[in-house]
Structures are given as structure tokens and as C-alpha cells.
Figure 1 (cartoon, helix red, strand yellow):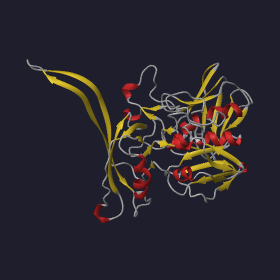
Figure 2 (figure 1 turned 180 degrees about the horizontal axis):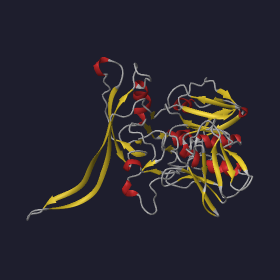
Figure 3 (figure 1 turned 135 degrees about the vertical axis):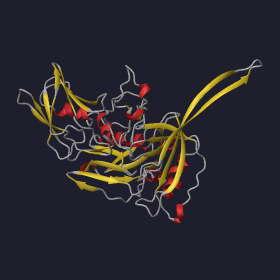
Figure 4 (figure 1 turned 180 degrees about the vertical axis):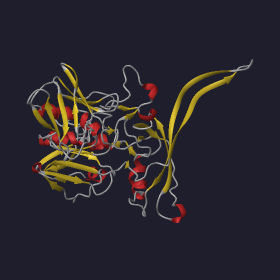
Amino acid sequence: MPLNNPAPQFALLTAQDVRDLSATKIFTRGSTAVNMPTFSSGEGVYEDAVFLLNARESEGDNSATGQLLLDATFGAGWSVTINSNDKVTITANTQFTVTQTGTDDPLGFGSVTTSVGISPVFVATASADWNRGALDLTNTTYTISEVGGSGSFTFPNLKLKIQDVTAFVRSRTTSDADDFSLKSIEQIDQEALGSRKIAWSVTDDGRAMCHYLSSLGDITWNDDTMRARLGFEGDETPTTSGGFSTLVSTHKIEGVLIPSRPYQAHHLRVTNQSQARRLIGGGYVSNHIGSYVTSVLRFDLDALLDAENDYKHFTNRWLPLASMGERVNFYQGWGDSRRSLRAAQVSASQEPFDLLFTSEDDGEYGRIRGSMITSELELTYPQGLRRRVPVTVEIEHV
């Protein structure tokens, strides 16, 4: 089974409206300007900060399949995906083994996994669940060896820090409902520099992170609006290791809230909208307009005496982007950016698990796309202590 965590870390991410930054030079890397895309009319509103930074995808050659194809020294038809049992699989046209030779095993293959199948399709299926949360490939290495032959190679060889495993497996060429045809900051950065050795992501505590080949140059901010939106002060110093640099924002991203504790409660409320009239002879006639499902979410907001202080971040950098009717995504289990899927939505054409959906526990995990319908919040400190402020928000499902 997948996450198997009854109290996962959750996140609330608002939409990111950057229409006013069309074609704006947001920063310079080394001596190369990086400009936002030129948006056509109506474009420029991103699903949330994950999509603004990396679009929940990897550049083709950076993706799991892309790296396999580049690294392979035998066989053909290499690919990586997540199967209907929510396990990572590797496929090729020849039999092979997968051996964990790095210290980390984020894909869940364990010590040795042998592919099975009938020529020309052999599949190695991970024995354990893949890791949820930010994906750091620094210490991740798998050795793939040919069965009955001498071929062998290691994978992956580009050790980036990526949003999560699903974003690593999901290539930029993927066409699904999460493809909104908007270039992410990661993509425009890579294209401007002519290098794929750059990755942007939202960290597990809600900050912006850029991981890049040091020789490409550091960032100098040119646009204060985007800099502040992503939580950077402008004078952050990157850390460097193994020829790569990592830059993390000082503050949390606007419109991103990832509390340190699991939520206290979550239930659904259903509103049936209709027009009904009583008949003279008894009974009713009714014109059903629609049924609207709402998540009622109760959680504790971290404040001054907690490990993190999100009180003013919530009032000044989250709520202004989440007024009534604005889009908000509820990540029920942070670290898995796929959409939530109800069990009844599984069909012959829709697997229970894939790169877009997770149906774990009948949709109790995964991303719920919604709209904020709470307009007023009273953020009272319990017992006078500036910690664990109780908050209740209502998010109507899209």
C-alpha cells in the first residue's frame, strides 16, 4: 500500500496570479537574464506554488525515464512509471536486476530486484513504497545489471533536488489534466541558461529552493515582486557541495501554508442546490441544479511559541491570496502532489494509482482542488498562550 500514515503533514496552497509579471525579467543568473513567459490574455494564473516553480514535472532528460535512456549501456525501451499498486516500476526489452548501491532508496527497490516478464517486455517492480516528501537524489544510486550478460550501468547520474518522486517520474512531455501549458520558473531558468542542471521546488516547510550547477552562476534578483512572493530577501547565500549549489528563501512562499502538525479534523459537507415547488395534490417537483462538496478543515496554526511562527505569515501572506472564491489546493498528504481520486472513480480506463491520481483510502490522500468559501477568521490564542491557534476553513471542491 502507499503512504500508510494516519496523520500526514498537510498543506494549503493558493493559486499564484502573476499576470502582471508577463515578460518581466525576474532575475539574472550569472550574466544571463531570466524572463517570465509572455502571457496571452487570461494566462498567468498558476495552480499553486508547486506549478509556478516546477509544474509538477521534470525536464525530459532529467526525468526518471530520461535519465535511464541516457545512462543505459544495454537494452532498449527503458521507462519508469508508477503502477496501479502505487509502486515504482522500471521496464526494458531485456531482463535485468536493480540493486540499491547508494545510501538512499527513495524509489523503494531495496537490495536487489529482478525484472520479470516475457521478451520483449521485462518489468522490475519496487518491493517497498516510494518515499513521500522532497526528493534529494544526492545519495541515490541504483546499479542496473543485465541478466545473462555483462552489461551494467548506474542510475540516476544527475543528482538534483526535486519536488517529489512523482515529479521526478513525470516528464515535461506528459500530457494530462495537470498540464496547464504554462512554463514554470524551472523551465524558463533552464531554457535561458541552456542547461538542464537546474531544479526549483517548494520545500517541506514551505520555502522556495533552487538547486543548480554552481558554474551556471548565482541569482541576482531584478524584480522585487517575484523575489518577495517567493520569500527571498535578496541577500541569501547558497550552500555548495559537489559542484552544485542550493539556494533557499529566508521566508515562506506567499500562498503556501504547511503547518508543523497534522490537521485536527476533516469532514465533508454536501449542499444540494435546487428549485422545488409543492404540488397541489401532494409531493414536489424539483429542478436539481447541482451538488457541492465542501471540505471542513480544522487545524492548529503555529504561532510565536511553536517551533515555527506562521501567525503573521497566515494573516499577511496567505489569507490575502485566499479570499472567498479564490482557488486553494488542499494537499491531504504533503510530499505526494497527485490529485485525490475516489474509489468509485476507478474504472477500466482509470487505474487506482498513476502519475496523476492516488485513490488511497477512498481519496483521503492526494490533492483536493478547491475554492475558499471562508471569509472571516478569528485567530484567538488559546489560554492566552501564543501557540497552536485553532483555525477552521471551508474549501469547496472544484
